Amino acid sequence: MSSESTPYKDKKVISIGIVRELTGLSLRQIRYYGERKLIFPDRNEKGTRRYSFSDIEKLIEIANKREEGVQTNEIRREMNKETKPVEKRMLKEMLRGQFNAHFRNNSNNKPF
Amino acid sequence: MSSESTPYKDKKVISIGIVRELTGLSLRQIRYYGERKLIFPDRNEKGTRRYSFSDIEKLIEIANKREEGVQTNEIRREMNKETKPVEKRMLKEMLRGQFNAHFRNNSNNKPF
DNA sequence: CGTGTAAGGAATTCTGACACG
DNA sequence: CGTGTAAGGAATTCTGACACG
Image (cartoon, rainbow over all chains, first blue to last red; front, side, top):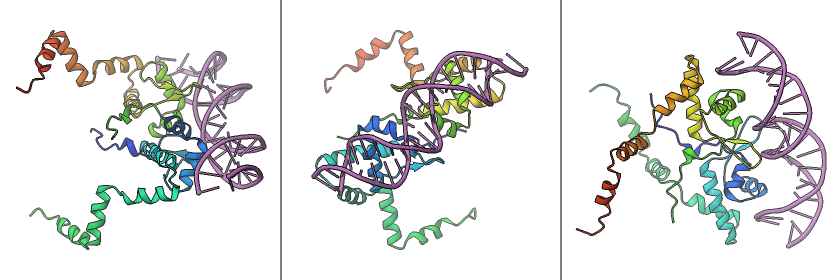
C-alpha cells in the first residue's frame, strides 16, 4: 500500500527556466550541453524539455569543468568513464558470460 | 566535498502543468486545493506556482479523499492530525519537559 | 462547495540563424 | 567551440468572474 520506489532524483519534471535558476547557467548553455550529449532531458508532448535533479547536479559539474577550460567533448568522456557502480558490476557480469547462468539459477520456480 | 543534504522531495521546482500530468487533476483543482490550504506551493518572482514531489503525493491523497466525498475542510483537519512521526515525538518530549534533560545528558563530550 | 470555462494579458519555451572567434 | 542575441510563433500560467448547484 505504501510507495517506497520513488526515485525523485531522476524524475524529469523540471522546466528549463527553473534549471537556469538552480544552476545559474543561461538557457543557451543548458540547451547546448544537451545538444552535446552531456545531459539527456526528456521532452513532453509539446516538445518542451524536462530535467531531473540529477541533470541539475551534472550541469553544476559541467559548469565547473567549463570554468577550468575543459571542452564539452572531454567532459563527456570523463563522465562516461565514471559509470555508475551498479551498471559497472552488471557490465562485468555480462562480459564474463555469466549473465545467462545467473538467470538459469534463478528461473527455478518450483517450490523445492 | 560531497553534497549529502538534498531533500529533493520537498524542493518546490515543479510547475502546475507537470503536476497536472502527474496527478491527473485539473489546473482548477490544483489551484483550488492551494486556495483551501491543503498544499502550499511556492511562487517564483513572476508569480507562477512551484510544487514539490511531496505536494504531488499530497494531491494524490486529496484526490482519493475527494472521490470518497470528503470535503476539503475535513481533509485539512485529517492532514493536520497526522503530523510527521518525528515532529510528534519531539512534541511529546517537549511537553513532558524532558527536552532540556535530554540535552544535558548528551552534551557530555568527554571521551569517558 | 467544488469545479468548468471563456477572457485577456504576461511570461515561457522552441527553433534556426547570424555573430564573434 | 561555446555562447549571446533578436525573431516569430506556440504553449503556459495567472487572475477575477460567471455558471451550476
